[in-house]
Image 1 (cartoon, rainbow, N blue to C red):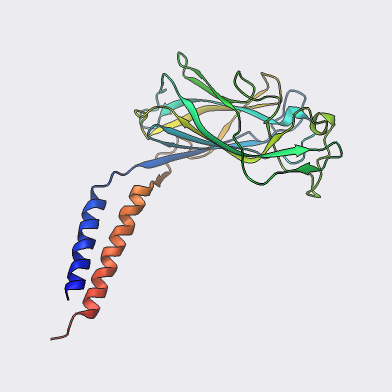
Image 2 (tube, helix red, strand yellow):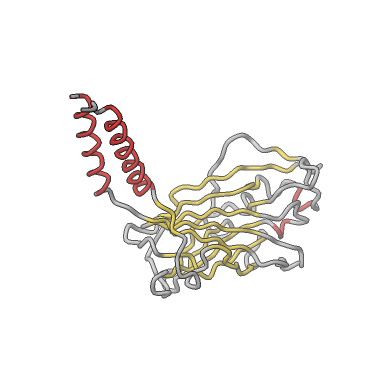
Length: 261
């Protein structure tokens, strides 16, 4: 009996701690280039950005969705945006920020179109450019501090899965190594940033020179048009639910083992 009593006391203490554990919600949005988007040379481009916002932290995952690009002008090189408050719809400004970490996969394309993808991930070597006076932000390979012309983001190879068939701007090695697949950036914007801040007015840049920008279209949680933001429970909230489940199961077990009078 003492064992069950101690277990109940422990579970009760855990429940109390979980009830007072801080909770937060992650606001998630996604942007894509519109259907039929092209670069300045008229070649098709397609990219996606998935953005998660919690208090003080912005996580952005960029993906080049274009298969087998024809030329370097179709490579994803920047993602620009502003910030806004999901409650008021008003612009939100911060005075600073920095990339705390980034993660992507490198890919080198050979002259015959075959490619090498080393195992593991690397830092993306992009930079965060902030115009605090205008509230503009740019996650960029092309700006000062970026690694352009290397480390632009490329999409999948041709249908055979082992070759890129683009012109020499893709295969001559001058832009290698590329980043391939989803590339994720964690940006610290300050502890005072509310969790209901979201990315607005997004645009994508393509190529290895400045100025080839395509406005992004929101496709998920398109605030402020979406009345109920897509909120994803943070670990503290999930832990609370888990703890409640443990308490419920322990009570069932105790009842099952209680002597019948």
